[in-house]
Image (cartoon, rainbow, N blue to C red; front, side, top):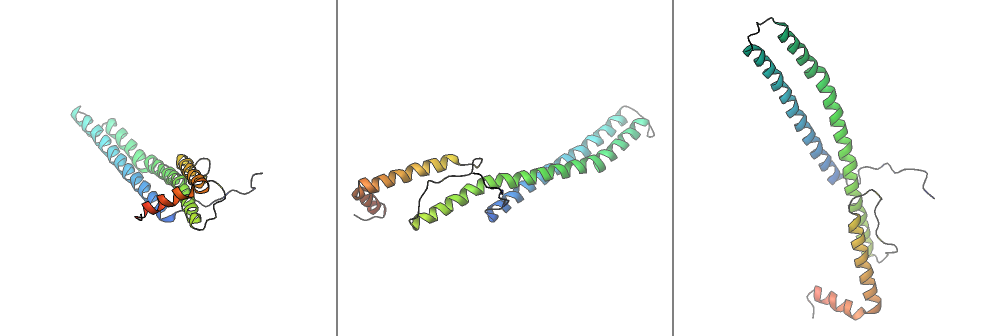
Length: 166
């Protein structure tokens, strides 16, 4: 039976996720600034093209360029930039959640090792990243459990060797 509520905590590992979101937001702002600069350059090139073509200063071509430049730079571009920034910000938050979740879960699971209270295999949410890490970890734990029950002396020797004892 599925729970009737859906968890709404998106900042699981705040330090990592906030840095990740700031990073993606910064990339978004830099990209938006580059596109703004490219639009300015594009319209300046259109004006230069009109001048090279010999159009007089009051020509309808220049009025057309000026009107479109104003609309593009002061209306359409800011709306599109805000929309794109919001999409990237939300996507960065959701993406970081799929990374931070498994790390958080693994950290909790590793803490439980010291308490000797492992009762179920490690698992992540269905759409989280690093599913293969949970599988590898579970295989290793199963191997160690089998070794501990069937050949505890080998496990003890391996642990002693790991810690530099003979």
